[in-house]
Every structure is written in C-alpha cells, then in structure tokens.
Image (cartoon, rainbow, N blue to C red):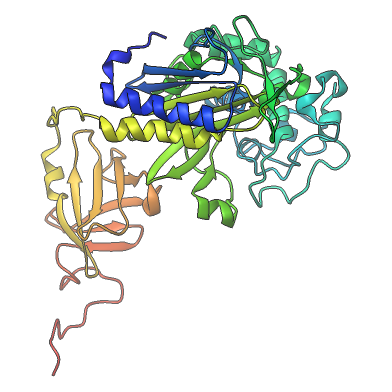
Length: 461
C-alpha cells in the first residue's frame, strides 16, 4: 500500500507522531509502528524504535495475535453467504463429536458459546502446537464453563473450533483457505502464519529495569485460527479499508455491517465501559466515537486495529513487547486526531434521479400521541423517521415494493411501517408495529388505540 503522507496537514502529522512517541517512550516498547487510513488509503505511517539507525516500516512483520480472529470470522461469513451454513446451526451439524456441539456458530463467533477462555495447560501461546494435536487436546475435560448462549466469555478455543469448521467444509487447511479466499484477493502478500523477513523479534521488557528478554515464537497448531498470523502495518491498513467498505471478491458490505453489530450478551462492566463484541470484531466507544476492530497479543507482540466507520478513519498500531503500551487507546487517539483536525468532507448533496411522487404524501410531520416526528425521503431511497425534539427513537426504512417499509435499525429494526389509506386513497395514518402516527397529536377520527376523548383538548378549570 502506498503511503501518501502529504495528504495530511503538517500539524496533524506532528500530533500523530507525538502520540506514538509518547507511547513508545513512556511504555518502553522496543519498537512501535503505526499507520492511519483515510478514504481507503494509508495516509500516514510513523515509527519509533530503540535501535539507532534501524527503524521498522509498514512492510516489517509483527505477530498480530487475536486480530487473527477477525480473519477467521470472515472465512465463516463467506461460508454463510454461499449457503453452506447458517449461523444459527449448532456446531454438531457440521463438525460432530467435539463434545460442545450444542453451541451455535454465531455463539462461537461472538464468544457466547460458554467455552473456557484458554486451553488446558501448559499455556498455549508460549508452547508448541504439537502439544495439542487434536481438538480434544484444545478443549480438555471441562470445555464449558458457562451455559451456552447466556453470556459473553472470550474464548480462544472457540476460534480453534471455527478454524476446524472451515477446514472440514472447505477440504483444505485453514492456512490454505485463508490465503486463497482472503489474503490473495485483498493483496495481503505480507500476511501469513509464519514470519518472512523483514520481521520484528519479540521481546519481554522487565517491569522494574530497562532490560529485555527474547520471547519464543511458537507455531500454534490447532490454535492458529485464534492468533497465529504475522502481518504488517501496510497489510493491516488494507484489511482495515476492506472491513470498512467491503470487497465483493471477499465479503459484502452488508455482511461486514453484520459483523460490526453487537452479537453477544454483554456483561454489566462491559456495558459501563462501552465494550461489546460482534462477529469477530470488538466494538468500543471512546470520547464519544464508535470504533470497531480488534486487539491482539502474543508473547513478544501487541497489535491493534481500530476503525472509526463514521469518520472514515482507521489506525493500525503494532509493537514488539509482551506488555507495555495499551495499543487501543493509542489507535483510538490516532483516529480522533485525524477526525478532529481534518474532519471528513461529505459528498455533495444530490437529489433523487427519479421517484414515485405518491411518496410525498408520506413525508413531513407526524405525531405518535403527543410526540412529534419528521418523516423524510432521502436520495438513497430510504425513509428516515426522526424525533422533532432531537431525542427519542429514530430509524431508517427500506421499501418492500408493496407500499410497506421495513425498519433497518434501532427499536424499529425489522418492524413494518404501513401507510393506511382512506377509501379515497389518501393517507389516513401510519401504522408502525401497531403504533399509530397521525398528522396531529391524537387526531380526531384517527384510528388511535383506546380512542380519542370526544371532549377534545382543554385547559384547567
């Protein structure tokens, strides 16, 4: 990916460099590389390193840990989009004999399958995968620690199962399928399961002294789909652009939007901190901004990919230390710096090319009880319902082609909006999931459930 650093203002570039410099220096990372993506292209890359005269760049590989899970989730969504599986299928239907087959595929994708967080000892991230040659070795004698589907509980073995599912249904190894169906179409030639020079070495930094210890880099075997990949800031910038905008050769934007929606029952602490999990993607809120992506860690390495979809800005941050800089706050700050210093310029407004003039009967002001709403027709052909007060339920609606509309989001997602017409064909009111919207508050003669007091509106006395 070509980096067009001149596209950002000098002040923005300095603020980005200052942020990663502080992270690398204060948190003592041997090296740290970051890339910012805007409009689908890398627009800035910055590097800080402890080695004079030898700085990594966007083409140097680092281990990305659990960012690998997002790649595995894409492979599963491809199977769903091809009709090979349904996300509601129990694992047993496609991968029998695991002992945890009652968990559905969507529950495994969203860490709601009740599985343990880790494999039985020894710690899988720092020992060879040959110690766990079979799925039974990954799951152990007590694979379930919670009731299936009841709560979010992050599970690395769950993604090992999803990788095995991909292998079973594709008739090839997870690595082969990933390269053929994701890496090659997206041009991620520096991403793979094993390091290829140039690549960073993994280090542990002593917590109380400025000294380092080399970390082993094990092949994770069956656990590879949960955290094996090596990648670069440049490749992950391309991957971030794909996750934001889709690519028909790999996965549609509709499926990616599904991945970005919360899919697991959240813990109270997660709700309070603004954290949720979708399908292979973490969803976070920071400084009033919604971010999607994933963090990752393996001994010797840290990684983070964060996308501000509404701002069309993403950030990738990689470091080669076991612990130290918390990379999500760094990535989130890089997104914020660009989004605030150089806000996205919206596309020009353009009117609809053609439309059904009868739709003008639907737009304008409506009331549900005493609450006012505006119904608008936008250039994308959708109806949007917005509270006049600025607060309250809002949603967009897609035409069903038969005069009715289906809600796309929020409280009204999946609900039917139906214009109810009088005998002369004019619109009497709107019926939205049994809620009656009239042109006036409690309009006289309207079909309001419970009726309208015949004495009408009155004052006191």
